[in-house]
Image (cartoon, rainbow, N blue to C red; front, side):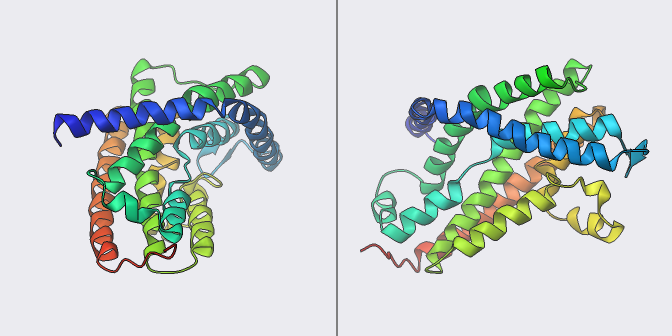
Length: 268
């Protein structure tokens, strides 16, 4: 990547961040919506843990912290990248993007990163603080853990964004993607450990999920925050995330090359 293109992508990140400021009131009210959603899961798991000290290797306090952090971090890495790509493909505006002197996927990732950074400062951190003030939860004691967890959060964003790109490209091959995108969201939330920690799954499911990227989005980063994974074990999670970023990137490039070779612009 040459310097001019690098600066272009940095500018796109900045512009998307600024653009999202116009909608900051929506995100601030979203903090309360997330708090309600987290509260529902919080009370559910508190009820499940009545008369129980531990389930699937997680103590009650660890499980409650897991629920809070899982949803707070989701507010950072979540994006509608797949829906935006689908819309451009179906309305024909992707044709304009294809003739511009930049890479389509890189532009989409840059813009989504700008949105993710906005979410971090105006959604994730405020919602985490808001919930902590209402119900203090356990925090890592080590600055090293905080650093590794921050890196793992960024890895979660990259993996989730690459998966979103892949499913967004499905619009090149079908006239309707609504069912595919809904299924993708449910499957990602379920298999990433957001709704239910992977340790609660049967052994055969845990072994199968070890060969998929989903647990690196939520479950494993959350274990780092809980300090269930420390030192070398935590660093291995970052390496695993990097591996999946590369694999998904290669897969996306393959699908992209196949897709643009059979472009049918539905919008005109």
